[in-house]
Image (cartoon, rainbow, N blue to C red; front, side, top):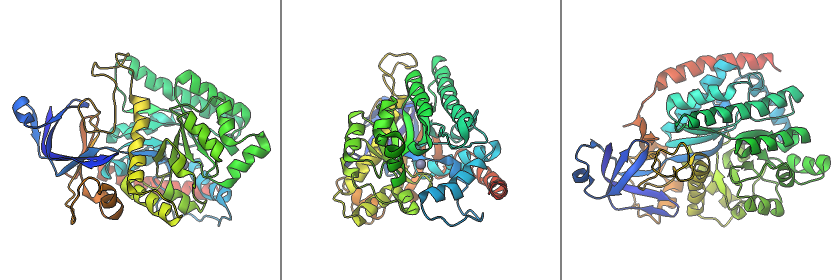
Length: 452
Ligand SMILES: [Zn+2]
């Protein structure tokens, strides 16, 4: 058992900062939060506690396959629009991934994430030349670093029917792999979703196979939708239905489903997603980088969450960008609204890792819950060294995060009750991971040159 004494709890939604309290962690969960806990638990290991503790941050949409795309030196043809950007850059990159590059991308992505206080990443993976088993390679990277995750493979028809079939099968295979761990009574660190690239690269038969996979595995679909105007209009032209309606008809929308972007979904589609309790992952920086526009309906989504879409995993930075872009677009939301979106990423974890009381795989402590520093919640925690130049009061937390508090203040990070970063020292071989990543990046560049 570990005991942290006299630490203030930061809560993101509603935003709050507590008086100093003691936090006892036992195994994967928080055992108790209160005062004078050292007297109650004299045998607990007393940890040096920094000033603040908060729930771990969640990145609700990411692509670790692009972790090595930073500083890409490969010659890329200029693009007129988003479709060309996919063809010239991203689809050339994902086709160049082999097992070693995928492994290295997962490790480097996971290392970066935990060092910025992120304890869970919802990943959307593509590697068309390595589909079978790719999610297990990714899982190994998450587990080596100690990062929690929800993984899926981006099924698509853009590489032919065989590739599409392999994509669906890899998602099902991986969900079964996770189910196998649970049936052995283990609590896996990595869960499975059913992945799809985007409506415009999915024919009806592939989409219905994905709907069947959603039903048979008890998971949700994780897909891009209406990232660009073309995806929305293609759905109406080729399939005679709005995107969300198409996904719903195939049985792909449920409370475990995650739709990324959604810039060009209509108000009716937004209402359908809300009704089905589907998450809408907003990726402000990525949208700006791709010049695709802005999701003006963002305030209307009940289950809006924040993702980076492959631009690292720094979620305080992402939240700040989401806020600034919203201000730039003339929106009316305030910093606490973006902290609520950040916090809501935990509902994805609740829905994937939570189990009904007393169900199989439940270690006896009730359903695993996320996102609060309270007894019974998962011990996914960030300890902060933040020493603010202005008072941090609780109801001004949003202002601190948008205008000054950054991941620079992350001191220690715990996932599932285990330190992954302790007193700023990674508890995994970070130097080795980055050195190998630089070697694999040079291989990636060569392979991209071969795949023009
Ligand atoms: Zn994405």
